[in-house]
Length: 77
Image (cartoon, rainbow, N blue to C red; front, top):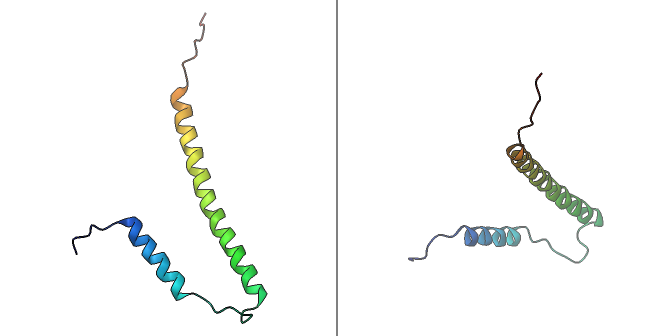
């Protein structure tokens, strides 16, 4: 029992447990509409994460863009 705790293993075990818990019977017991809703929900979930990544990338671009700006010489008469 001296095994070190690992986030990767913990998440993997949790996902496996959730899959086993929600494993649904096959063989036409569920309406086709259910599968359509599940696919749509999965897509929406992934799109939500995409928006987070896009915002993080934009923030990183803005941060590096402002740091790269050079001073502009202005001629004063």
